[in-house]
Amino acid sequence: MSEVRDVVIIGSGPAGYTAGLYTARAMLNPLMFAGYMSGGQLMLTSDIENFPGYPQGIGGPEMMMQLREQAERFGLEVQDRNVESVDLSQRPFKVVVESEEYFANALIISTGAESIWLNAPGEAEQKGRGISTCATCDGAFFRDEEVLVIGGGDSACEEATFLTRFASKVTLIHRRDVFRASTIMYERAANNEKIEIKTFRQIKHWLSDENGLTGAVLEDPRDGSTEEIAATGAFIAIGHKPITGFLDAQIETDENGYIIHKRHTMTSVDGVFAAGDVVDTRYKQAITAAGMGCQAAMDAEKWLEENHH
Image (cartoon, rainbow, N blue to C red; front, side):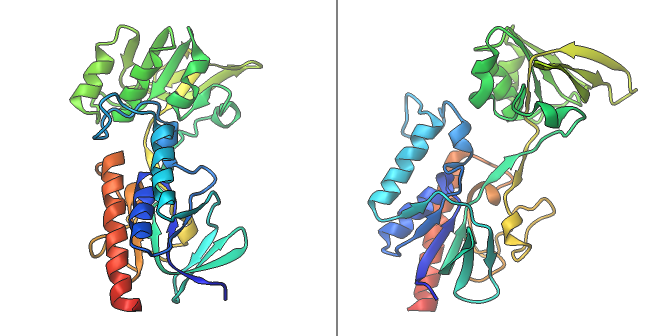
């Protein structure tokens, strides 16, 4: 058996890096598998204005690099590889990465969540050719063009507002007339002269030609009536699903796959902790993820002390 680490952290982002910082400073020699897309969703966020201590704001990727650097300075070892599976039936826990096996006395899971797609007809062909789930990644490609944003929450309103920097017109499409978005986010979008809001509309299918996306057929869910709308870009902002497939149902989750905490940040498996958006269905903020990463690290440290020393 290869060496057993005190702590292995699966996933990066604010939760993982904060857990890494705390476990490294506690001399637990942590190993992190950050994933190929290390840094999490904030790698796709251009400006973070609501993280305390950054009066001028900071770019998401820049903040993730700083968090990583800080944790590494105290001894966190980071590998940008994906975990394929884990075996939680025995201790030490087994973590399989690209068919190599690693072992850990305690695990911290901070794999986050990923965007949900609509999967409307014609969508698969236009992914990355006009249809995206990340306005900050792809918005600049649509300078002076007309784009759509689909969704009714904070991220939809935020993406629509962000896209007005580039697009000549943004149409926000929502299948109901009630928005989940916070008042400030909704009003910012509603008061922007470049944004038109269409309620009671959903995407029936996407329209395209050999050059890519040309628009969509919208359907009114109340009576099934349809209309066409022209657009060269579309951004789907209808929520996220937690990245928990690799756990193979060995940990208790809710019906949407979010990990459930049992005692503080401990999961249903003794010695396995979870933090960040893989758990959080309510706040979903960088600061709350970081806070939970700190809690998970402290809980893991205490648990190791009681069970392994």
